[in-house]
Length: 247
Image (cartoon, rainbow, N blue to C red; front, side, top):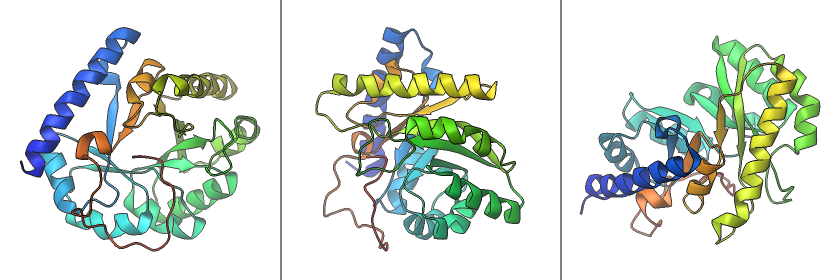
């Protein structure tokens, strides 16, 4: 089976699971965007996924994306879902249509500066470390609410919602409270801003159905679409590493 056939079969199964989760929650499946996580996968896999109808792709590392994106279809949309260092912001602003991992006012101010230089307005999501895990990036809920007005005052950033990576568990039901906490935090942010935030990016291959039931509008899926990473998949050379916010 080639990549296109494999991804098409996996995508059909994922869409059916999303439809079922939406039915349980009384939601419209059209509200859910799949962000296909292609970290370490080469451009030919991205091209096959695009043939299957996937249109939004997530990368964890700016340098890997910089090497990959020029070799991929121009009609698809790229989101940065991994931790962003301030010294990579200029490239991130040039490469991505959305940055999902804004985790500090300092980073947001640098994105503002680079977006101003580029003459563009950039949609962003604010990353929240809902469980306060020391190993993960992201705002604490309290700090986010403290800095929300300052973030919203940056004219080149368009805050569209929140993103999180909850503690990993083999049982998706154990992460439901963290997804619910992010949804409740989004409601609190909307009250502070007096404006809607349309997106919640939460849920990966092991727990996306629960995330959909709790209000996710974007699910970041890698393994469930492309299968486990194996030695036969040639990684794009990168410097540094991060734990990632997609699977």
